Image (cartoon, rainbow over all chains, first blue to last red; front, side, top):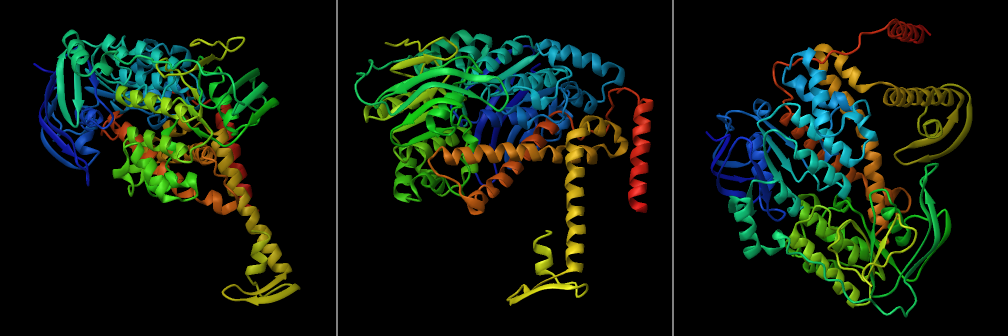
Length: 450
Length: 174
């Protein structure tokens, strides 16, 4: 008997278009399913339906049937299903209830009426399974995003679910945090549905692949068969994204930004940057690489003029703009048009052209919060590039985006360089094109691509 | 409050120290000793509320408060989650301001920062909805629950509680 059974599921959020249409699939005990698909393809809605959150938490039009462990989700809500299904969502900060790690993991066990004398033992086991035993007595606000998401995973596993649902759980994490999280998922002793944009990693974990596009399932196959289908039909999802670095630029021309022996520390904390020098010339893409905490974001902010170095010189010619790693920061105006126009003194003509350039013409009068995560990410890029700055500084622009969008972003970066714009990209992603790659944490600039 | 209140509100008592023009809507501008005294008391009340809130945020273990709440656990949890909103709002405000500055737009004065109020409120609502969804998925709201055993109160805890009640009693008496 199947653990989960979805028959003819269609769902439309209030005031929206159908998010999923006529989905039918079965999930079996112990299998790991990679759920792939572009942003907005209905993956999250399917996961919410499997957790009973659709239709109980998100009102809307629901058709079809979803049964989990023999319970029909139309008559059993998320709290009823909690003993069978556990979920981990995208943003760890939006899931944490308690202030201490052990209490956070215990929260679900208390809700499930686990015997009090067993709760702390189960908390310890769950934290150990995700490699977070050392965090037991830490405060949740002190943890990194990666650590916090592993605590969320421990909270989910502590309930001993039969089905674990992971909705792009690494999209808000840096590369190190994401790798540690996915390694912890490998230890799960239950069926797993993993929605993930790090396709290679997801395929390595999976027994089976389900791919969605425009609310429908376009592929449901064992992983080997799925790899062949992806290679033929969706090569970017089959590792078909390759880096195409442009040839090195001529070194003539004054740098748009030049950093000389820059030092920086946050308050009384340890020094983040210790005497770093870097320059970016017109038409050049420079990738800043390095482990989490190596100072990429700090250096990017200094280059953009958002931070001043403690000592050393930062010199810029012309205007710089900076794209934050969080697309949720580009939500300060009431419409997408106003959001983009903010960077050009309210010029709606230029803003509309920028929205069109990034495929967001349909969203002109929509509130930015009504956009999907992928659309918000494009809105952020439109907002910082609309003013055609001399220097574009982008901080982790590929975090959590699907392979198609990543390819489009790579092509756009090259087009920016071709028109003479200097581009500085802080990234963990080895696939973004660059004329030069600078690895922070090393003793000097390491020009990999030249 | 101490500066504005004496100007815009008239007690009708005390010694008149200064009399200014009469403004539309606000009325006559004047300062008297009574008004200054009342303004100081009200200002101190506001400061006490702010200090109490700060002390609660910094010193109280929210988890223990929730676990000690007994039958009112949901209310205690709501209070604990609401107080966590303040640092989240600070982080969001800094992030929004940075995103605006990153586009080459400087935020000037109260009007500049006022544009961040609406997205801050909307962001809080979005975060609250996400948290509610996650809590429901973890079984929050089921009828039968249990409590993980916590360390029993020590003598120091009882003495601290007694001292706190004594302080409150003295404050009320004064």
